[in-house]
Image (cartoon, rainbow, N blue to C red):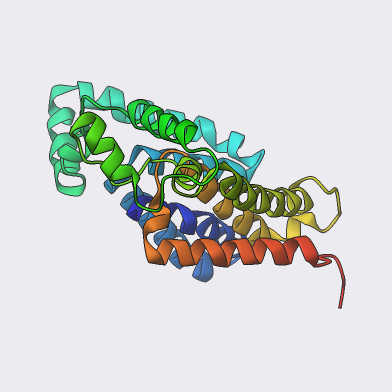
Length: 250
């Protein structure tokens, strides 16, 4: 939950960096804040959050991201090789132990049941009740009766909607959201207009919404009230982007 919240903030951090790049007094605070968000995302120990921060960077920077790949690769190689040298290795170990606890690098929860098992169980229930579903909050009881293991949800928002309320209801909700997103995303990224480069915050807005939609395919952080409110704000903004003439001088 912390990881998705930080992922949704990340594109806006980059947007501030871009618009403040010409003034050192504005750039420095933006850089410190952005670095803090990146470090905190690493500390969440969420693999999906790590993927989200990388994909968000690629989307907000576009082709410019390619320019920083050599720098990132060189920095990574320096850290790796210097850590192999005994004296330097101890120094790095002591630094990383203070900044990032060891368990954040190695403590990935292992379980006999994977997400594939959870999704398979959910799909079986959907097939048995395709029209009206099995009711809200029914998955934990169904899954527990099948496996003896408690899981609070299906780890996929679309499957959760289909299982709880049926396929027709889930498709109606999902397709509406998808249409709003695609129309807005196309308007920002694929309509060639000379002023596209000025709409950095609109791009950050759409990237944030995209990260949220993709993240719900592997987890359901939407159940957190603050995150669900943020999602509807992002969706409302996307609808406004789709309906508004961004290039109107007035």
